Length: 206
Image 1 (cartoon, rainbow, N blue to C red):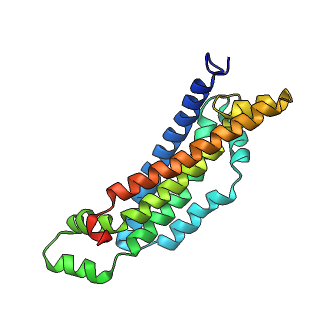
Image 2 (cartoon, rainbow, N blue to C red; image 1 turned 135 degrees about the vertical axis):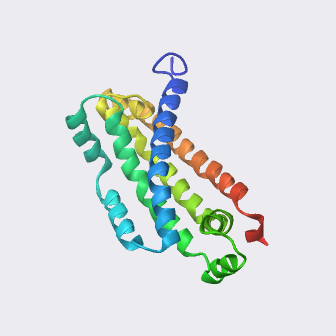
């Protein structure tokens, strides 16, 4: 019964991964252009980072409850909270990654006649990509661990094992759910670390 049906482990894992994938993708679509753009132009970075870091101070559970009261039942409250959690590391790392590019490298690229867009895509981004991917990896692991809060507003995912197990005083169910979440977080860390190595420019490893 733990492997089949809507309460089965495969179904709950699928729901959990869906929450993580969608919220991480939305956060990346928002945070990476902001961080990369500010780092490229070198303006407004500290303000953006400070604003983004406010998201770290907002309790995810409190934000979920607030959005639940505002928009009602559904996946929106959960996605809003998870996106807010995922944005700060992405903005910070992408900005720092772009700012870490040696000014001499930028000047050399300009001297070779590369346009601003060519310098961004062919020179700066490949150098900054390891730090950018580190931010994405950090966000994804945090979201993977926090997505269990979806169960508090009646949604699915692995958080159901924790909430239902506590309500029914079934310690084995709670521990089992927590172990699966931990395994998924470790797999996310390892998988994205592998992706980070794959996308890293070979010239940076020489």
